[in-house]
Length: 73
Image (tube, rainbow, N blue to C red; front, side):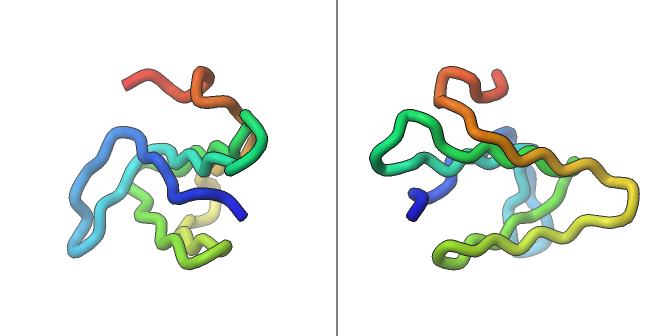
């Protein structure tokens, strides 16, 4: 099970906050999962699932990464 996400640059979107990336650390391994999302997409994290609204043509990247590889603010 992955840990709670760390978030990139935040912005308000209605009653939720949106970020341009989310990092889910792994409790044992040094690599976690980095999720890069379209600008302003609000992620809903529920247990081991995520819900992310995307539209046709928008890019989403999901990859393994260490905390040292996170995008710089």
